[in-house]
Image 1 (cartoon, rainbow, N blue to C red):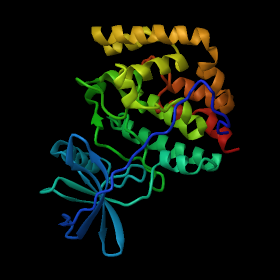
Image 2 (image 1 turned 90 degrees about the vertical axis):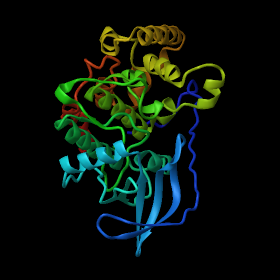
Image 3 (image 1 turned 135 degrees about the vertical axis):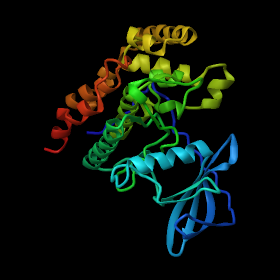
Image 4 (image 1 turned 135 degrees about the horizontal axis):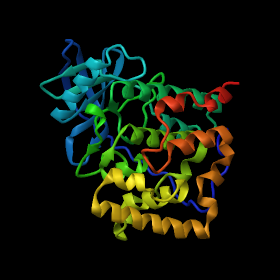
Length: 328
């Protein structure tokens, strides 16, 4: 059952924006189909030439995704490996000269859907979450990791946004010089860019479950720019929040991150969280998550364990009693 109240100690408001720029461009896909590019739905700040655009062909609407060449090649590799998948949203056409991918057009995402309709039925939320979990399981079955994106795309319930996906060869964690994806949905190790594994996807999906079940205001940052102005890294603000909610920094996380500077920062965030929880014990997820029901609380607690080595797997998520409880 969705949370029906939001605690006064989480004064975080929703923040979103969308650019809308008209363009005039006709492009032919590899299939021979001609598309007329329209408004920009999303642009990359670092390079306005890349982004997501609406397009038309005949009486049908599509989405163009202009991406850097490495992402284009990644999309082709994913589509080849997951041919015929009903759970993963792959491109249906492309243009190699333009590094452009073509997708069917869908109006919104799971997160947008819930924002627009707070009364969206609980049973439908559970059905969508189940399908997203199955999509993550399909990726993990072939050692692909989705990584924390800024939303989960719902297209007759399918998982999208694979720009930052990668294949974990031999189960090795990913090490990057910087974090990837939206700060709000990253796991603790994902915030550092070090030690990212399948468990990182599970943590992010746990946050999506909390959001979908009505706890969004516990997760959303109020104002990124305000934090930066005061010299606070958004990653650190999220770390403090997550350690307050889900438990203090564990040794398993420090070992997986394995970086002196980041481990020092994680310990510092954990100390702040410890002091905060001492004054406000109601911040713990085990307290405010009770409204989700005991089984949901148990499942999500296993998904959001700060220790990546102790989190439940996506297979364990899908066999959890909560799904049975949700459909009885």
